[in-house]
Amino acid sequence: MTDLLAALLLGIIEGITEFLPISSTGHLLIAEHWLGRRSDLFNISIQAGAILAVVLIYRQRLWQLLIGFREKANRDYALKLAVAFGFTAAGGLLVKALGWELPETVAPVAWALILGGVWMIAAEQLAAKRAEKLGERSEISWTTAILVGIAQVVAGVFPGTSRSGATIFVALLAGTTNRAAATEFAFLVGIPTMFAATGYELLHVLRNGGAAHEDWTALGVAFVASAITAFVAVKWLLRYIQSHRFTAFAVYRFVAGVALLLLVPSP
Image 1: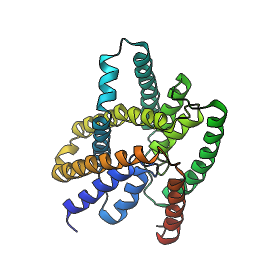
Image 2: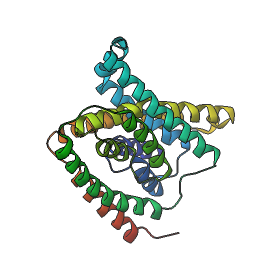
Image 3: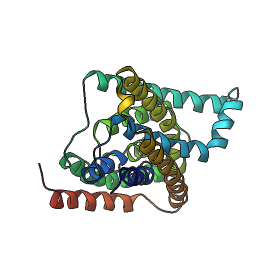
Image 4: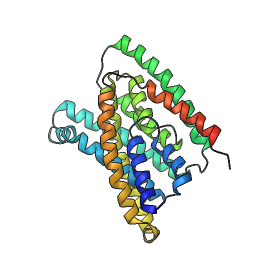
């Protein structure tokens, strides 16, 4: 398999899995066992490609927040996005300072997929009960914003958890009972988060001279593939959640995790 084809496949995997609650980082770690290990810059950059798709999908909402910032509702929403990002940034810097690195083995990812699937089913039931009690609520509270920011950090520390899944369900459990509203906030927080992570990693690579060793052509191919497939995946997901729960994704996580434990040998 050529390097460009491998990069293309990794970009497609990232685009499909970044916003579906099945863990993009986990799937990339698994895929790299067969397609070859990639740099941290490569993995973060193709995540930014997927985030670009969200920017395009939510461009009208983002423009509304920008030009209507003087309106209280828009200003509060934008500030809550900023607070969530602030908690993520602070947590991310702390994790970096502690020297945390992604695991090299599949087993931790497999267990995170399984446990995450179990947690999603339980969280779905709890969220449904809260929705019955509270009614349809689309508002994002300050508490929700803070918890979403923290959830992003936790998802980054434990690959296989799923950033989108963690943030969406935290929002649902915190009182935003409308799935579309919870999903929108989770996705919008991901925009500054992933762009900041890409910028941070790029500066780190340039400072240490790693750019000379990066295959920029392969990275570009994967970036474009990620953006295109993520656009399709997010559009599909937003339609899907209008009439479906997330149970199917929980089942997939459980099956995938068990399969990995049974089929992928431990080092």
